[in-house]
Length: 295
Image (tube, rainbow, N blue to C red; front, side, top):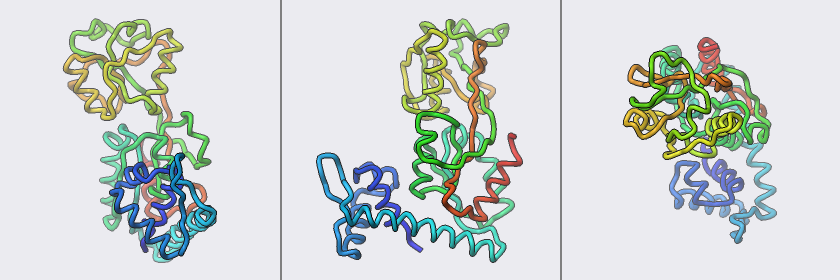
């Protein structure tokens, strides 16, 4: 059953911009425009007005949005109910998560999931915690791994369950003074003039780091802002600057891995689902695998 046009309509309604909606949906703009045009033709009404403020829902669009959201919830509940009747664990599981989760935590767990349930199809999207929460609201994913807290954590009224506690640690260029076996931790004052290779602004991790550094009386001197943990590690190894990564991202070639001696940089990773949607057998199986690990 094809839900893509409805999902596209809801994302456009939220973002008020066709280009950004297409990027979030991983579709071309002409494809999204075509879906919207077909939807408007079927309904015989314009759903959006194009204004200087972006694409704004018409009165018909506002009415249709409420029904579209309900339709998606009901159809997803139907999928879950059919799976429960058959007693099988099959179908497609769509997961969203940050770089630490998708790169280091999930791969062995997904291998275990597929080994137990080979009929499952997977789609994994790497994005920040705010993006994961938005994708859940829009029905683009079934379950997410997010950093607890953050400015948008309570905006969406999603159901979050604690999964594991992570810690960010400092990794260092080979010639950095703190790169000494006798050094077991760092203080914020140690980073006063250190060039830093950091996660991009606006992410939950960057917000956490900037806040902690400010409390320690330091403003981090970013010389690079990157999305990829492996890119950060490579730049640090090449001597561009120091950086922070999850302790789960450490490998044998990484220098440092120092915890913060002032206040540990711990964060809670949560499993998040939309409380108004039925949890499918596939999602339940995935959450059972999560429960067995890292608690």
